[in-house]
Length: 90
Image (cartoon, rainbow, N blue to C red; front, side, top):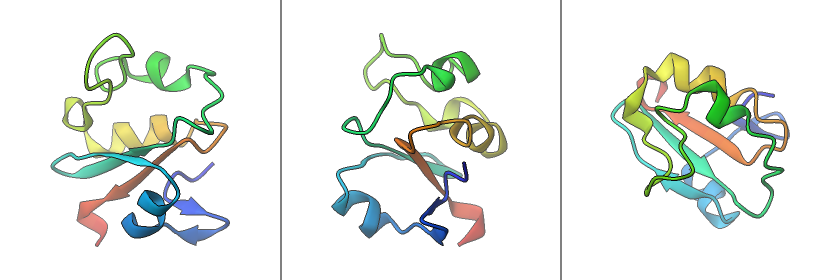
């Protein structure tokens, strides 16, 4: 799944926030998470626990890995609960 798109279209921050995604800001990439659609498969925490750690607040730290690594993990999210917007592609 491409975590930068919804229905094949590039996502925007306004669309994500309107769809109940919460923003976790990073220097190179912003991560968006929607708890209402999360299937709790765990690809994120297994994929990079430095970025995604459920026992921590905030549980997502976007700057704890490179933007490329963050994107790779988010693209494994089967539910679409995780999305991203890269700042170097704007």
